[in-house]
Length: 331
Ligand code: GA4
Image (cartoon, rainbow, N blue to C red):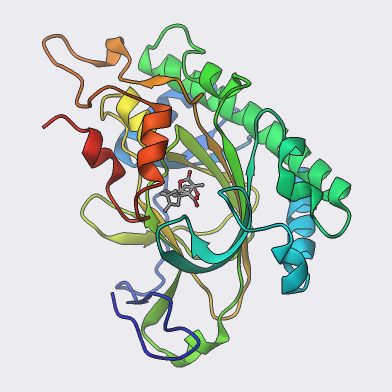
């Protein structure tokens, strides 16, 4: 990691371009939700990568397009107006700073809680223009994405032989589910053009703490996943599909059979990237432990016992790139 002393960028991390530069990885598993055997491909993708793309997902394209347009309207407002919806504590509008522990990125964002409902976000009432139009676009989108997430988790449970088949989805369906939603705006960074061979971090490498994350972005690249050998791969953008990440909690619930995947976002010199991510998490008091049917006879859980509240509290004391699960592994 190299930090250059250019005044405008010196607070950000600039990294050497991965080799070969900007090569897209076309081997990402694709799950077709209209396929009767989708559960098998979901389980395989979660075991092999902890990441997959979903097509034929049933979420109306107009919900994605409407929310993208509303989000861009918001991010294009003058800074002083956007700041009225901040700071993110942790919910609300934020710029450059990510989390409470010194991480920064070439990004601005809005973080919202999804339960009990979108309306309860206090930052939304301070949204400068048409708060009700924005709120309704978020609500329609999040409701549809939640439905798809429930289906994915039910197929996953089925594929893993977990009973009942709603054992995972009920954690997200619960009205106390600690889930959240994030709109990320990565403005173009023209100065990057002059720094050949360097990339600017939009959102630093990390794993997601929750059960699953559902990402949709516009057609700008920048999203990368890390293989277990440390290689970074660029994911070709696809604005009509969703990308699913296994979160740390799902790694624990499957006793390490599924792995939470490290990912990051690089800024683009010319194009704006807009992404929307639903993070499906359990209720705060939920015990995060492997399903007994996934712990082989004579084996034990790889993790100490903890609740989602304990994990989340510990996560908020960490830096983005930290190995958060490390603290909960049995030695
Ligand atoms: C990563 C996944 C989600 O974006 C998020 C992030 C959260 C935040 O932005 O407030 C965290 C980060 C994320 C993990 C470690 C802590 C908390 C920033 C940070 C440094 C909303 C989440 O749940 O965890």
